[in-house]
Image 1 (cartoon, rainbow, N blue to C red):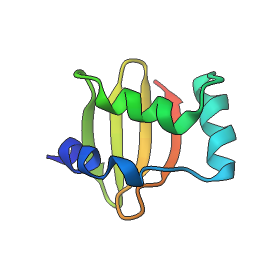
Image 2 (image 1 turned 90 degrees about the vertical axis):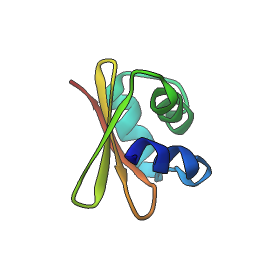
Image 3 (image 1 turned 30 degrees about the vertical axis):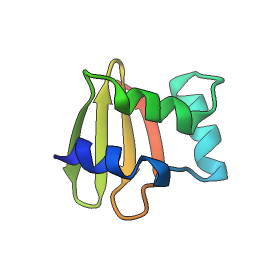
Length: 79
């Protein structure tokens, strides 16, 4: 259900300037972080849960935190 909500609003998913650096540093990636996180969300094995005002995308070796009202990727980190 939560995963479907994120997929339906995929065009709204974004991050801030600070978020870009934080996500790249935490996940040790050089890719553009929003498209990277969206590709992770779209994976068959991703699991989305909601706690309070945030969605948590648990996939592979990372957890991505997305605000449920603004669809802003707040952070992402390795498990």
